Length: 165
Image (spheres, rainbow, N blue to C red):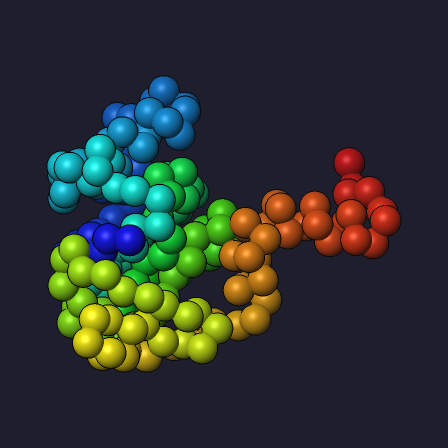
């Protein structure tokens, strides 16, 4: 796992650039994710990597692809002091874990870390622990399910009923 340090105010156009969205495929958008902030990101990010960012992560438009592209690229979580409200909702709905941590910028680029979202903590090398804001259990369950649609499918399957047409 690698951390990718980003500045504050990363917006949805930096995550899912408009010029790449014209194609309509998430694979195309993924190739351009964060190209103006960290040109190497889309090429070098690996499944399980974590983004560490400054305040206001995900500001801008309501495009769901901004969170979906991070899931597509395998990002395990984003750690930041604050998020855009729309991005926050979209992220959990597509299965992207967001950890709100006031001390996010104490985490350096490229370091190894571990996190426990249910316990609300991040552990850095040397045993340094940072706390995160609590996440409601229903949102953590949504992350475990892989997002809102898989969660609903699981819920309908468990109840033995069919989703509405």
